[in-house]
Image (cartoon, rainbow, N blue to C red; front, top):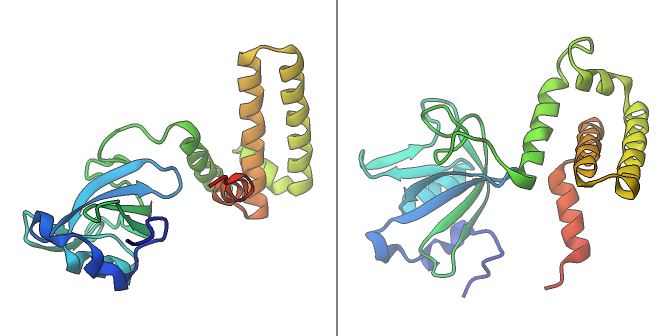
Length: 212
């Protein structure tokens, strides 16, 4: 049995259960950053091989009877991070970075018009900060902070950290939520300035606290 924690490789195509659905496997595509489910499609062996070779999600179209790379006409491709098979080797999960809206209706996900929720929204916040980094300092508080540099950003983080501590000591839950949101925003700005991501922070936490 293959290690399901390890990404699928091209050498393992024969280990998948292609015979259960006439040579097709259902494929769930998830945003690698926000963890939002983006779409469901189907792959045959050739489509999966093309996906692994090209680095972009390629499906088998059941209606057109051919391979099609997601975004081949719109430009909204899905750049592959990892491919995993399930416990029965008859379904796939792909973590990908979308290069635009995934749904043909113009939304991020084919399942919802809303964006990511929960902790996944921090990745969207990082994207917003990255976009605003290119704005003029007079137009955006984020751009102004980035223009002032890491020392000023670090000062703001210190101030917000004190506010969180005070809310925790003397405030209520609502105050804690508000101050924590301010702190996380400024931490995200620091990430942009120093060139690291929430993924790296999460990986460091996992490495410290993995109890398997």
